[in-house]
Every structure is written in C-alpha cells, then in structure tokens.
Amino acid sequence: MGMFGNLMQKIFRTSAKAERPHDAAPPPGMGVPGTAGGGAAGTATVPGTAPISEVDVAAVLDKLASENSQKLDWKHSIVDMMKLLDMDSSLSARKELATELNYTGDMNDSAKMNMWLHKEVMKQLAANGGKVPAELLD
Image (cartoon, rainbow, N blue to C red; front, side, top):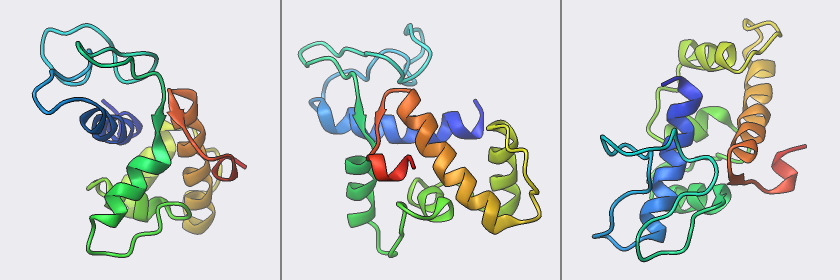
C-alpha cells in the first residue's frame, strides 16, 4: 500500500470504528484477512449498522486533533495532518507522497509542494468516499 492509501486507511478506519459497535467486525477490505474489498472507497456495510458511504474527513481529523496533546493544524498543513495520523511527515516521506500523487513541480520548493500536497490529498480523499469541506478543495 502506498503513502496515500495508508493515509486514507487511517482516516477511514477511525471513522468506521466510531460508527460501529465496538464488538462488530470491521467493514470489508479494512484489514481483516480473507475479506473482500479493496479499501474504504465506495459503500461498506457492517452487520447491524447502516452502510458507510461517505466518511466525514473533517469530523475524523477534528476528533483526532482534540485528543492530541500537540496543536496540529490539519486544515492547512500536510505535515500536521500526517503527524495527526501518526505518519512519517519528514521531507523524504512527503516527497514520496508527492511522487505517488503525480506532483510535477519542484520538490526542492517544499513550501509549494506542501501546499499542493494538502490540496491534492483533500481532493483524493473526496474522490474516494470522503466528505471534505468545500473550502479545503479550492
């Protein structure tokens, strides 16, 4: 799984845990060996719960931020978002993510790359079943 897949899975898993009873099985494709499905995109169902068709990305990240001792601004910083999700946020990790998401700009201009990465991650989350506030997609 690539960097973006890992990031998306962390957000969607957190949402799935919050939306199902603690004793229910995870949605298909969410890390349970032998289950069908290729991830969290689309609609997943869990016995005894309503289908999960859209993950509220802002709600998940806001909840994680409220539980974190650091003040992390995930709405504006890809570094803070990655830290919030307990991911490597080093420059080399961000370059890897940028390569995976087909960034064509200068990777040595980390400020520009970081801004692009944040917007692209939000767009990709929205394209894969995430509900992302419109102001984060502009």
